[in-house]
Length: 121
Image 1: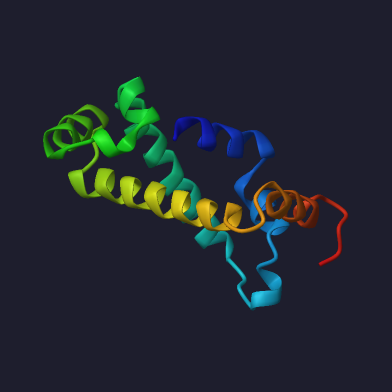
Image 2: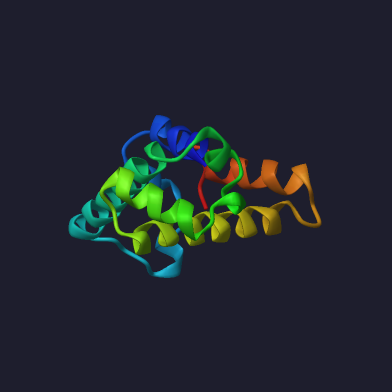
């Protein structure tokens, strides 16, 4: 979980990453305020993940109610925020699994080629 967030941070500022996505074609335009809110939320998620053990980061399914309570106390976050992070992670995993579905690596290669800088969509 933590590795994915770090990899995203290495891509550059959130606004730059969002501009690479084909959201314009869907009529979605995020304001500076919305970018800032998203960045703030990701920063809070990072603090929550810093309070998790390596085992919890590798396998979030092992996180029980008592672990949520411990993580929230350690991060200064609410248990609801911890649950939100876990749900977001689960949704992302499900979406990634769907992309890998029938086309396997070829789907991923096409997706990466589509999002590479300089490619017209």
